Image (tube, rainbow, N blue to C red; front, side):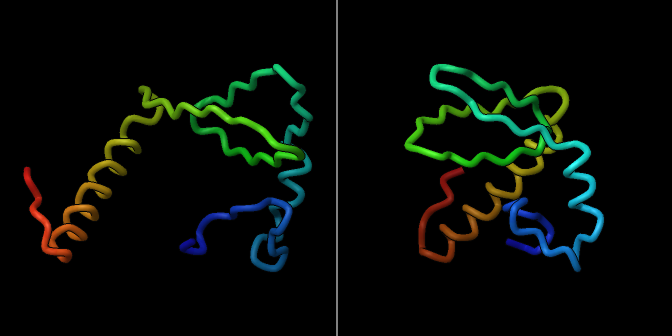
Amino acid sequence: GDGKQIFDLREVDADRFPLLRGECEQRMLEFEQGVGETLFVPSGWWHQVLNTSDALSVNHNWVNPANVHYSWSLLQRERERVFAELEGAGGDEGA
């Protein structure tokens, strides 16, 4: 990672993020999802999942009016990165 994101809320450096634990305790929703249950996570909601047994996860990341500008920006950056890698490997951009 680039050091700007926290990837596991169970392993937060309290010296770097002194206010985070209190914020998490106030705002965090924690529950155990049962067999056959479905969970909807709204666009833009930060979330973390811990599978306590074998599990099948079906994710669909939506592009919608609330996040289209982020998605478009990401797609443009990734396109440039892929073309640069192809060029460095002697590939043909094609487009």
